[in-house]
Length: 277
Image 1 (tube, one colour):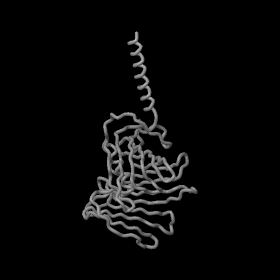
Image 2 (cartoon, one colour):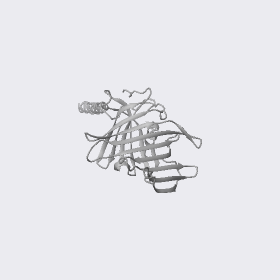
Image 3 (cartoon, helix red, strand yellow):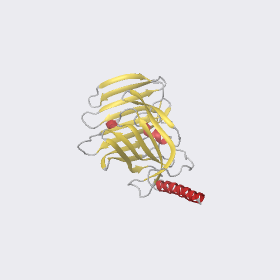
Image 4 (cartoon, one colour):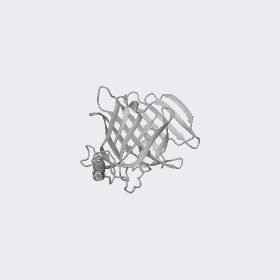
């Protein structure tokens, strides 16, 4: 009799575990299925444009627009060119207007990076990093586009390939199926840092306002050592589409005012529709 009761209790316990697991998998941004065949991620597609809205809690505070431009060749190296526009809405506590431009090799390491603060159209200051891996150095410049004055101009020695503040976005997409942890040399603020990205092969589903069905995604997280735009630093999380485009669907990051949510609201990419579960 006691054995029968124990068996029933054990069965009930296992049933509750299974029920809880099923319930978790019905919710957004959680583990769904880790047994699908991996697809090969396509390189950056010329003409792709992605628009994201940044929110602090329930308050929209700005947008991030990313573009893939034409491929170019420099020093017999074929490079992808990409651009990013970061713009805050007209809010009393936020006034950000930045432009970034990067040139990336086929493995999506940075060869050139340009960053401009366009918040004041009468005085646009910029930062420029020119990576010369053959000579193992970076030419770093700070200047003002209107006055043409260069305030900083020096060379820094390097011994590794480097990421910049924009190239990381494309490197993360290209390697979403690696199921490995990456420690990426990153050049930021004229210093050498590391960006840590952790891939788990964890499939998930994500819900966003722009799509009326759950999107098949892959989850990853990471950590950045440096301070980026508006105090961006620390831990972050991301969900990329579970297909050969690996489109970033949503992300969570930490900035000066706290944690912000970044969500895809518009996109332009040939033959792409957010994948369904």
